[in-house]
Length: 321
Image (cartoon, rainbow, N blue to C red; front, side, top):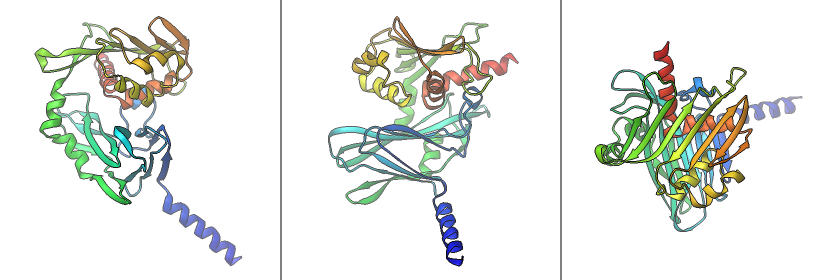
């Protein structure tokens, strides 16, 4: 009996020691809990599982220890040229210059060239201006390199990137222009994304959110959609391909031409629901799509464009009331 009791206690201790830890491996998109909240939860119904790991190929794996706030990436493959092998997206909130709390995220992209790792990091926020009082999960990130662990991101750098992103990141941010196309009295968020200095920016994408998806639960509306229209044919193919992968659209047969050649100018992609039935539309072709709600949730919470669209939609609702 004592042996059995000790075995049970040992098992419980082992479970406690690994609580909050998760291992992910192989190409895919994986989510884990954010202790700092999730953006646009009123639209998506997802208030916890919004921190994300994206693994781009079968050679990459990651260990996430939520209790110790550690993320460890492994990949033993050598690459002939620089290739993205994974990313980490952390969610939280911050105070805007006007004092409002706004959703923010920190995005770390990990690449390899040969056997050497490199990383780039940047922040997302739906408003311009300096941020303060950042509340975001403080993860340290390391990788396996040359048989040893090498830290590529200390946790303190995450909040610093959001509050003082540095000259290079700040310069890049200023080159991304967001213009609202919403007419007076209109309710749907409608924006154009441009690249370049303010007066010289070139429009690259128009995005519209029709209705409020509220994609989880019995209160989900019957009719809603978001649409993306390319305003140039110069969006890099690899950017379009990776975005489709991150939001669960890369294996849709309807989007095979988009995966192969990227966006042509004025190509339009629409995901939504009509009469309570999900659909996917690309160009002049449309198909039923049961995964519309999951794609909308990922797009609104995980992408910069979705974050801006959703934020504008929620602010319109606040002002309307």
